[in-house]
Length: 230
Image (cartoon, rainbow, N blue to C red; front, side, top):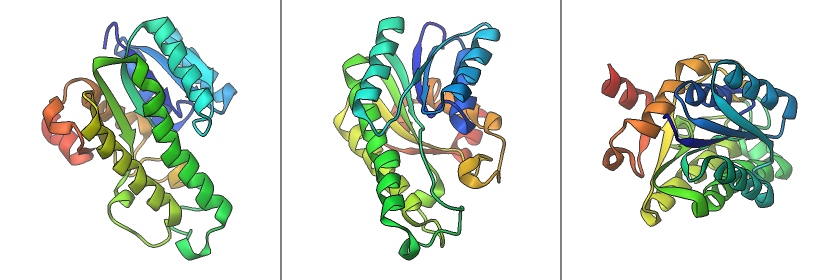
């Protein structure tokens, strides 16, 4: 990824932080954003200490003006944007214990505003700055495609985010795909699953080595990545 510019939303923790560090290690100039300034600064500092280049921008993907500022910063510092990882997301409640019929309107609204509209804003605001061969990766999970009890409007929001990815893939010249790393130990999974660092390579592969025609509009899951890189 030498010489590339990569934007990672939700870069302060979990998958986003691991991906930002991996991209930095691979030579990309990373522009990470998140709402948590202190945690984001720690990730950016880690990248820089490891010899990489990175910039942190405090931003909320629910606010398109914030997202526009992130993309403007990335373009100003690194030129055209080569990779976008739309990773910022929220889960209100305990995984597996939030039945749809029991959710509050506030939780439903914020799941949709962050996990769906936030993805839309991330891709939309990146468009003026995307390189012709850029790749956009949308983080998701199996719950988007296979309903499970207790995942409520979070699962609904992930299904909608994947639909957005397919729609953008159909309309744009650039590659847009979904990356599903399986169950990863983050706050969204109550600490259950693989360590985020163990799946960062999956995002790097989807962003660089994966054949464009094979991933555009598709779901790049753990099985696909392992089969391609074993």
